[in-house]
Length: 273
Image (tube, rainbow, N blue to C red; front, side, top):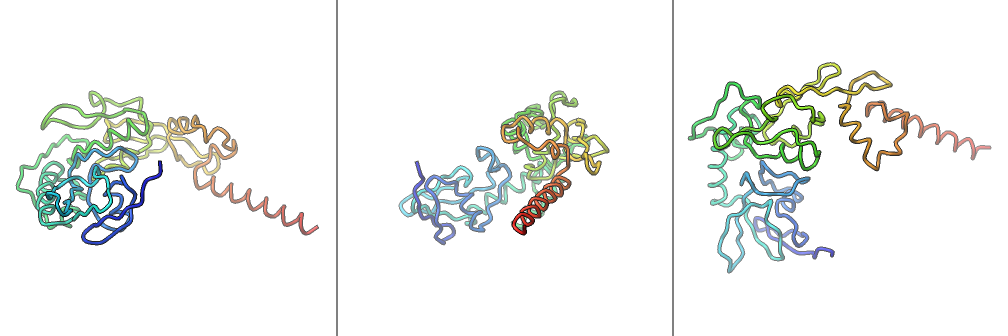
């Protein structure tokens, strides 16, 4: 069933939307910044970090603070993204996260945006933390590894203050695809990968090592072998050109461009005769 077109008010300005659309998506589409640490479009939202809170301001409705990543739009919805109440809560949250992840430069930048440059809470520094004291336990890395990549390499370990994210028993994992999806969704830049020759090392995940594939054209190592094999099993790659399958993206683009050029030249010759 097609969603109904509606109108919503954000910070007093009217915007078009679809009924049931998430408020955070509507705001961001229209250039309105709403911070979030646990929101990722490819995953089902669950409002864990609370950073994306907004205040509902509809007449006749009790003012309410709620997460914009779980708030579904309805016709006439009116919200404020930076009301006095929202900012008060958001600043406290940022102080808590600065205590949780004191080494995250990304988190510090976000905090400064709201005038928060220190925290009144005790900072949790671990000298042996593989995530460099930059993890806020948002869970995005765990979820994308399990729900999107179907690998399940990492998970939450421990309870309470001792909770961490890593591989089981902090041992190297044979399940890791080396895809770096976890690092891409991490909001605080806590996850580290590095390539060393033909090996990709997941430094954050117990130094798990994944073999890299070599480009048949330029000889550059460019993709994890396990990931390439997994992608190759997907239906839309079954008919991939064998000549292109072992090339890195740069060489593949060049090869395709050459083929298209030859096809165009042949067509020109046909019409010229």
